[in-house]
Image (cartoon, rainbow, N blue to C red; front, side, top):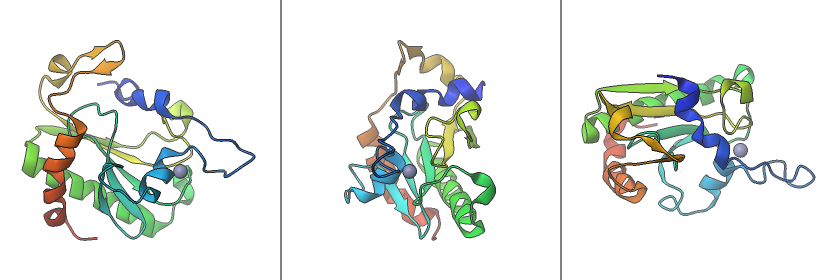
Amino acid sequence: MNLERLWTPWRAEYVAGDTNADPNAGCFLCDGPRVGNDAASLILKRGSHAYLMLNKYPYSTGHMMAVPFNHGGDLASLATEIGDELWALAQAAVRALTDEYRPEGFNIGMNVGTPGGAGAPDHLHVHVVPRWAGDTNFMPIIAGAKVLPETLEQTYTRMLPRMGAAGAL
Ligand SMILES: [Zn+2]
């Protein structure tokens, strides 16, 4: 599996903000938690420093991202307590997804910086992608769109009740 291909859809979504205004303007990873409607933002769990959301352009059903609340793209300077919570959220995602969807594997990781394949290089995020044997065959990429067996809203509705038992933060 080519990881760049795996996460490339994020590139098309990211639109840089007006750098003369709010430096975080246009950052969907900043905006999501501020909307005040976690269902609309597809946010499944909030911690003290980070949150867990469904990826709006999932590679596979249940594709989630653990994201710090604070804007920043430098992993080297990320505070330990934030990194710890990102990992705890990724683990919670794995537990909840395993309970609900029984995936056969996962891709978990970060694309850091644009050359690293990050679609939102200025805001760190950890991808959690459930995988099934043969999933690249039954969810082909056709004209940039992927065919998924259920909608994001259906996935959200299935996953939300699982999050409480998936681990406290
Ligand atoms: Zn941001």
